[in-house]
Length: 245
Image 1 (cartoon, rainbow, N blue to C red):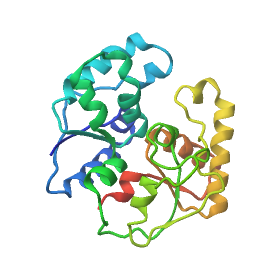
Image 2 (tube, one colour):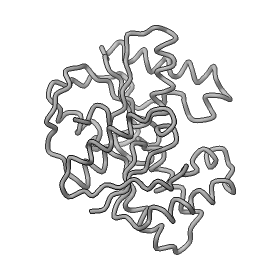
Image 3 (cartoon, rainbow, N blue to C red):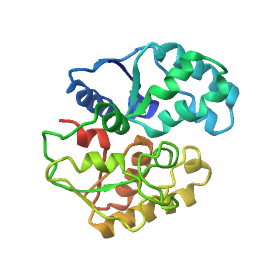
Image 4 (cartoon, rainbow, N blue to C red):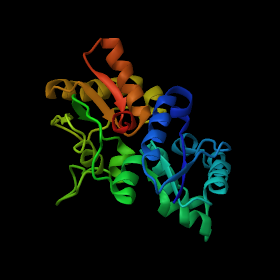
């Protein structure tokens, strides 16, 4: 299968090691022909989230022009994948290229779980890991179960982490609450945003978390800023950095 790697703005500009880790993971699989389209740009999520749809539209069109030729598109960002799958639709009407992309654009963990069907990882990671469920991945991609859901719902991110030798997932008291980032919310409502992040970190501290992980670099950036300012005994790593060999 031809797979395009979509690297979001946050990862490209601030955390390139996450993109490299994602590449190393995908290169493990012989049936995956991975490519990085160099013409790619922002998916338009920041504009759309603030209501500037006219500014997001040309970016959505560019995304479809670039990525529609691939069998699958994979990204280490639940929020950007959700933008493509759930919010591009208003920009396209009866466009077969977008219809294909809406069904074949994946967050890294769901691609590994649902398409590749990973059975095990060869490396070990002997740490207590706390999983932060980012809002877009949780409630729009359904990567994990929300507290408001009834019945069984297999957690795709948790399922992958459990396949790594030595890794111990800690149990949080409230494992589906927002960290307070929310894009421009963290700027417009700075005080509330920081208190929400501190609340999430307190939950991880009481659970014994050593490494805090998530599927979105933006959430981890927000939480890591609070960790560093408060000198908390926690470390953040994107999920790709843990899954990478």
